[in-house]
Length: 294
Image (cartoon, rainbow, N blue to C red; front, top):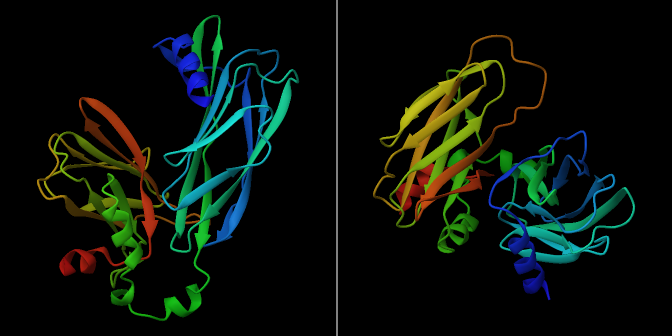
């Protein structure tokens, strides 16, 4: 049934898409800001569709280590496929505003900051349109964080990283940032690229009050945009090794704002001349020691 709905939806959608005005269709999420690793939480999204009718689809791609199950689907067909929550309607609910919800279970190995992004796709005047949900940041803490914080950084090697890399999927993992003796924040990123060797780009948004300086680029072009607080590593051709690490440091340049220290990032890579995007996931692990053990 779902396969037929998907084919119907794809057939009706045009290839050209653009963002629809947020004033017409809105997505209002309700997601906890912080949970413990291994726990589950509920995602609620209120969809204000106005007089919109007909075919529509909601998609929420979850990070690695998350699993979703359905709750309130508002008469949509629910599917969880390749870490993506999909709700699809042949006919949207009659109400101008309705709420969908689903449960999300986290693995005990997951921690750090994770960005929740979702899109709502629909047809308007035979044109495919998209409304983006405003990104939400979810913090996942380890239950044993107090005891673990007493250990040395060298003891943070996680067996779970092996499980992620063994899946053979393209991934980018950020070591939990740490402060060195010069009061600089070190950020290490591990890329697991399999046998891909074409275009690649890591892009991260850093907190205000810092400038970014490259430490280890692995032949990438390093770019820091001080106005937008964006760090980029860019390759025309990715390194030959299946796994490699790039690093940068954050140097305080002015008074640090009194707000949460959050880094969010994505990696872009090419497969068969098509650009794919994944979120950078954060793990409490010493990546350099992990690589040295290999």
